Image 1: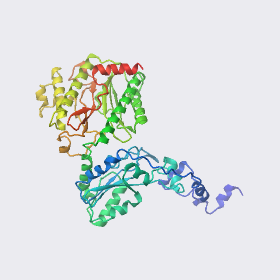
Image 2: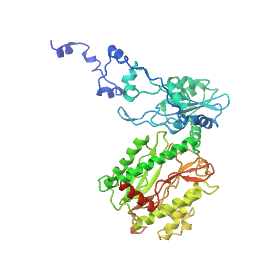
Image 3: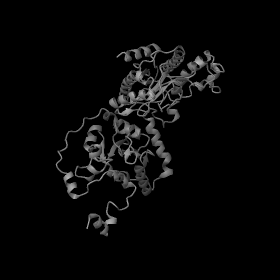
Image 4: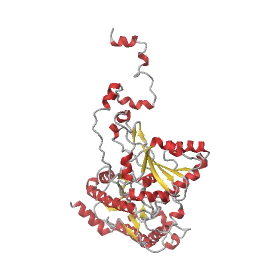
Length: 517
């Protein structure tokens, strides 16, 4: 009898492991056949060299984490505060996107890069009325475990070794615990101890918090939403004023972003005439971002010609021509997850035409006026924008473009000048490119500038090719100049991107110097 006949004759053949119905969740394993014998498992777990007992150096950020935890917990004495990192997100089938922790978690844990999916910071109330940050995460498993070789999402054989509790404690200075103990830690004294969680970050952690709240008779679900959002709001607001470590990382992000821009300039000859020249520019910057940092702080805008008049042009699929301006809005996120945010508008052939220079100088003058206003005493965040708009409106009036006077346009009932600059002039910058976005208006737009604040100044003018309200020579020209600034201890404001050329003469000289190498 042949083997096929044997199989057909066997009453169990139809229900063998390979032919039994598969769940949809299991079907991602169809691409490979994993051994499951006991002999394989025993052999796989044997004969590995001992792990190093060396612990990593303490990170410079560790010195700031206790103060951040205290500041985060200050409005919530006696409460237990839960800040998830978030988990890996599926891109398609069994392939995940790169992990990037929620910014509130990154701020309180000090962890950068792609560390640590599924982790949670718990701000535990202390007897002194403050809070201690405890980091719960999934440490690496032993090499005798099935996870080691079989788990393509977390297994060491697939994605590398996760750190141990001791290693993360050494690096961060935080007390660490296995994520498997999180539920018991949250349930301890629940009811006597109130719970808050940053919402909509990790559904599985939120489900545990909901269960603990229900069992303890605490508000949950929609009844707890306002309390949770208050925590989220506060964790955003405490990042408005950066500590010395953060300020240093932001300066570093700007320094390496300049390197990325120089690679962009070097790529301009290849981009010119390429069917997707904008992507040549995007790719040049992206390569530097991965080589010297964690990656991009946000998707790069590489907008040539009229594409510059689409504020968030990220398709980057257009051609680049010699007479074009190309508006590049790009920033490198360094390993600590702090990002720069720089825009330069560059003449592809190395020289501004007269109309291009006219628009560029107007935008540059607006940027200088905004910085000058920021350096005055008692300046509120919104005043920086107003100073830039005064210059923009005045220049548009002089060019005969405004249908009314600059003064009338600047009035609340006017605003006609905003047709050509509809966005704001500034936003806070840090772990997020638009940092502290959950802060209240009185803490953001209406707030006085204070030491430690880092923000952008980025006026622009955008004359679309189909805009019949402007002279023909201006149509299709879009210019934005964006710099990153920090408020110093003495209240003065420094442009930390000063070394990235920005005047017409300096930009032309920069392009000539880079392209001559």
